[in-house]
Length: 268
View 1: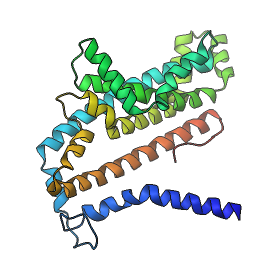
View 2 (view 1 turned 120 degrees about the vertical axis):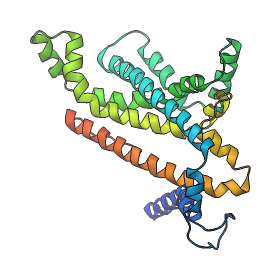
View 3 (view 1 turned 90 degrees about the vertical axis):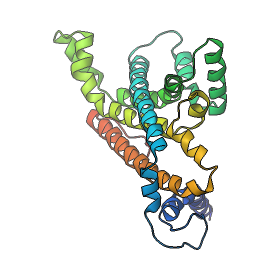
View 4 (view 1 turned 90 degrees about the horizontal axis):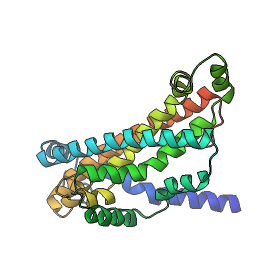
């Protein structure tokens, strides 16, 4: 009885969580500007309207710049932090890792306002660069979590054997460790890219006069006539996010299998 109740709760929770996402394509292909049932018919006009929107393409270019830069920087920092935490013991290790992972539990609104106050206080103008800094802050913990799993599953005897054969620490890392954790690095890049592309609050606070895709979509919902085109755009973004997360999970599991580690759960 208890198991059945938990199963019913889980199913209800998943329906409540994902039903709005499944409604996106219904109204994106609906031949009406009014978002309501019953549906009027099938059309692709909203996708054409979205495609011909010059402001949307400008916001998309900005978002791709931010997301790509964020993914690369967060993964570099995540690689360094994960390598240090799994390979070395040093004073303050737990505290340092706690600070790195702190943005995972802090509300994004608090993080955004704090960054805004600090940046304005030191005279840094708001721009795409400040959004990248904010996104790196919130994406680095995800990268650390992914890459820590990848580094922990490595067989330390491989590294020791390389040292015995005369390799330096740098060459050992480049020739042996890096190829083994590369699936985890690819997974981190894809996850950080997806998180940055979909993030709204930090982009809204720190973008200044520059428009990013998430804040552009939010601004368009003030105009009822623009809502169907934004639903079409949202449908495409959901599909892209699902594809990227699926690829990221594939590389994560591949990396664990490659190093002989144990899979303790992932994104999918």
